[in-house]
Image 1 (tube, rainbow, N blue to C red):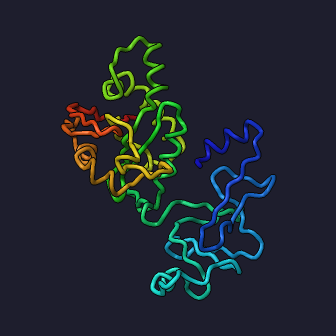
Image 2: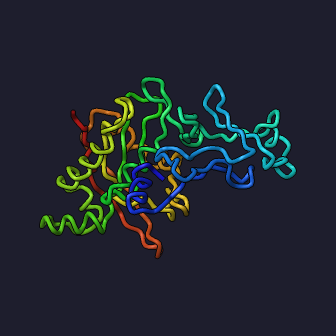
Image 3: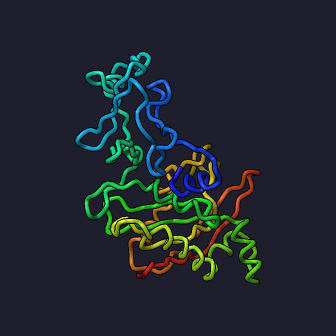
Length: 274
């Protein structure tokens, strides 16, 4: 959960807390305490638990609740357990107040153009705080700038478009209306506000469809299958990192009831200028 969502619940008076843990430590290892809640952290270790950060930024844990190993898998156990420490495969750091900040899974952490690590999930969550954006996919590992592919929330943006008397026949057409791009750009500018220069979204496009678990683009808990979508939408990624201002799409999509539809459309690509 991103800091914007967290702040929203606390503004309502809900004493929401963040926890961090994994199956290998029997659940929780870090948790927020009353009156010591920071919106971008997961709190302090629970009693009996030690947390350290390795030289390459990995979170490691030592406690009596750390597991003995993976069943009949000594190789995986050897990778996870070293000298009594459990290696989480998560990246993070401990802030000046002793709170743990979790970036993301190691394989998903970006290296920005300035060489600093960055969690795309952090920015994706910030973007999804907007009522107009249902899903977001941030790209930019070891690239010259950050780009984003956005999926609008059809019901919310549709209502907004109806009030503006904008004509459209479905999701695909609505997503490509110039006024909708302007609306989405305003959400991106808001998300960019507090980010370091290298982490700001520079170019974006609106996808012609929603990301869907049935298409293997999301897990059932709506987590992005990053490697899969990057392969599926390689044409869009290439266009975002070119001087193109549009990308032509000619593809087939399948519906849950087995029907298929041919999609031919041009997706606009917008550069966010200061």
